[in-house]
Length: 257
Image (cartoon, rainbow, N blue to C red; front, side, top):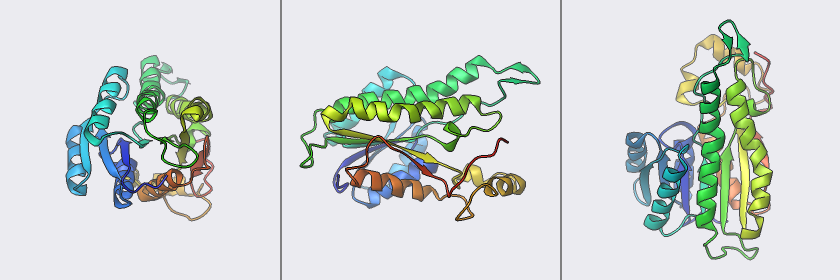
C-alpha cells in the first residue's frame, strides 16, 4: 500500500517509538491520528507535525473507549487504512518468586492488559473500520495492521515475566490475526525491537547501557526510534509481507540478566 494520502493511526504516539513512527509516516505523506493516554503529549506532537494530524486520548485497555476513539478517527478522517500499535510497556517487574515472595498477580494482569489486551482491542476495532474500505490494490488490500512486541517476548530476562508474557502474546497473535483478516484484505505484522535509544533508555546509567550493548552484534549501538518508523513504513509498502514478526535488534540475543 502506498502511504501517500492514507490515514494512519499511531498509538503511544506522545513520545518514544510512537512519536518517531508518526513523524516518519507523516513525512511520507500519510494523514496521522496521534493517539495516546497522555492527551497533552499527543496534542504537542500533532501541533509540531502540523497539517493532516489530530490528537486523541485513549485507554487501550478499555474496549468501549477503544471502539469510540477508533470510530471518531474514522469519522474525522473519512476512514482508517493503517494502524501502528506501539502503546504498551511494563507496569512493574519482579521474579516469579523473589525475596518478597510470589510475583504480584495484579502487576502481571495489568501488564498483560496494557500489552496484549490493549493491542487486541485496537486491532479488532480498527479492522472493523478497515473492512468497510474499498480495495486499494489489485490484490484487494483494505488495510495494514502493525503491532509492536519486544525481544523480551522471545528472550525475557530475569524479572521480566509479566512484560515477557505481554509481548509474547502479541507475537503469538500475529499469524492468527493475519489469518482471521485475510478474507477481508487486511495484513498483520509485528515489529520486535531490541534495545532502542528512546529518552528513557538513554537516561539509564552508563554501566547499564554498556552491559546491554555487549549483547548487540552490529552495529554496536542502540537502535534509533526512527528506524522503527522506517520499518513500519516498509511493512505498509510491501504487500507480500504478512503474518510476520520481524526483529529489529542489531543481532541482539538477550542475556539471562
